[in-house]
Image 1 (cartoon, helix red, strand yellow):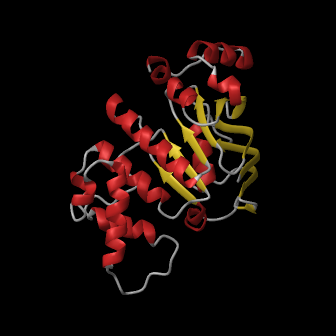
Image 2 (cartoon, rainbow, N blue to C red):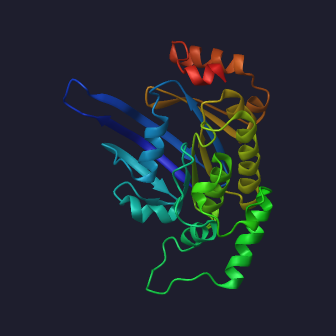
Length: 264
C-alpha cells in the first residue's frame, strides 16, 4: 500500500544551515499494516509523513501509494488517498463550524463542489450513529461549534473525519502527544477500534515507547533519516522498553535522544 524508495530530503541545501532530514529512506507497508514509528530528536519522522502527504517534495527517490507513483503529485491531489490526524487538536477541523458541518466537509472530500450546500436528514442520521460509537456524547451536539470541544473530543472527531472516506493510508502524527494521559489512552482505544473495523493501513508516529510497542503489528525505529529497526510479530509482542533502547544503541551506535519519549 505504501512504498518509500531511497527517499532523500535536505533542507537549506548549500548553506551553513543545511540539514539532511531523510537519507535514503526505504519503507514498505502492506495493505492492513499498522506500523508505529519512533525515533530520537531529528530522526526524520515528521519529515517522512510530510513527504508522504506532499508537503515536501523529496530531492530524490520515489513515493508510491497503492501502486501509483505520487512523488511529483501535488498535495491537494494526493489528499484523496490519505487521512491524517495532527499533533495539535486545533488542526484538522474548522473551529467556527459545527460538528455536522465538519463531517460533511470530510464526506465531500475529493468531490466536485457546486453552489448547493446542505446536510440531508439521512446524512445527519449517519453522522449521529458514527459519533455515538465514539462514546463521547457528541451525537447530541451536532450543531455545536467544534471550537467549544475539548482537545480529546476534537482529536476523536478529527480521527472520524480522517477515516470517513476510508483512505488508502492513515497518517497519525503524534496525535495524542498534546493530550493528558487518560484522554490519550481513550483516543488510542478509539484509534485501534477504527483501524481494526475498517482494516486501514496506518502509519503512526509516537514519542511514547510503550504505545509504540503496545499498538500495531510492526514497530519501526528511525535514526538520522533512515530506518534502523523494523520489528514485527512475536518479537514485537514480547518487546520491552529497555530491550528497545538496547536495540537502538546497538543499531545506531549512540544513545537514544528524545526527552519526551524517555520521560513517557
